[in-house]
Image (cartoon, rainbow over all chains, first blue to last red; front, side, top):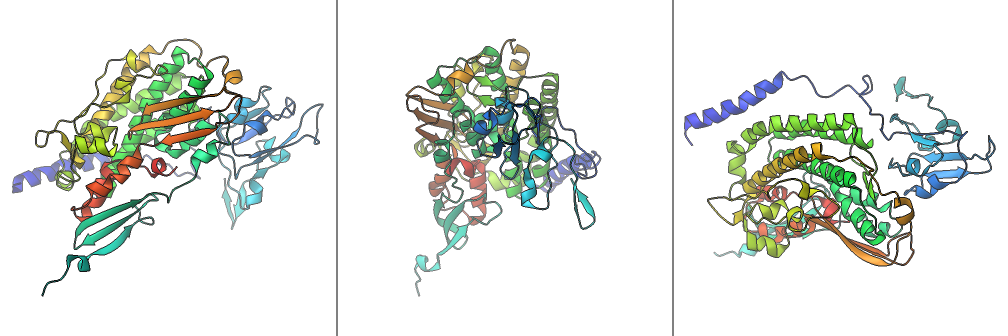
Length: 143
Length: 378
């Protein structure tokens, strides 16, 4: 391996590196910039209580036992309250697939930061609406 | 004065805390800079997945399989799904077959891109860590557009697939493929022609085809020795569409040592694998037929299975991945599921490969076999 061949190899590598310098950054500043989430994104759920029939198929389908159902808690004629434990959920989509009454959906919202572990248990007040106060800690807001 | 060589020997543990040790540990006996004994230890990553499967029904089981190897999620969940289909007698629609094949090949490319970066980083080439991982993002975008998740896709299900192709998915897949086609010559230039890489890999971790077959290696590791052993060609699965396209099993024939492979040959082999997969996807994408994507009776048939046993297998990125499933009559869960991961044999072949090589080459030999701890510790 002579001097010139080594020099040639070095220049070949520098050529690639030099080109790469002018490529725009591929990353984005996450909390400040939002990235694109497709329509099918399996983020947090939303429970539409009017259509729910308390059949508990979502509870049966869940492989990690993240869903609890309370059939006593009724707002309409035959619905039930759902409790989602997001410290257990693996976002597999089997519960949404199991729901035949269009009552349970995934949403493209994946911001689930919480300060306490217990706050990850989404009760009926949190799972039926998309509005949620972001976590505030030391003067900063977390999504 | 004569000293015994054994007096100089020291034992060190490589892992489980080492950065390159992805949760595994190997005991090495060194004399000076040379390794004289290598003792691989499986078990640091054990999650008893086979036992967990016995308590999950036939739709939930595939989720556990894909979590064993997130990098090839489409491929990893397939053996379970096909075993369930065989016992339940489900018929996969033509459209689902082609879609499965396309996504499995895309998953293979994505997994190999991840491995390039990982292997190059282990050799100290950090540029090659970042570049393929950027291109990998394009495939992840396509997976996300298709299934809603980047890694844990949960796409294959007994009877077909869960999510249909739309314009966005196809556009993103084509974008990812154009990107990798554009960048492949650059990677080849950087790695295969790079003097640093050649010096570190040529002649390192060399074994013959007979040795490889004896150790139970499969996939790219054995194809790099020139053995065209590929399940996609040898035993075409009726629920996949590999027979709809024209392709050849890629093998490496090295003039310097025919019938043997070193770390360099295995790298070349994985470049060829990507080219083959790209060819298959390109041929299949225009051929996706119309029709349903799932067997209409999948809910009824996959709920409770009759008594029987089936063997599902697939040519994964790292080798042959199989699953043996046994069910009892009208049970909702399997009686036993036995996984055969491709990396157990490649991990334990280190016992024969590593001795007499230098300590610095250990990670090169290990990395060149494309190991994934999830496959040997289930």
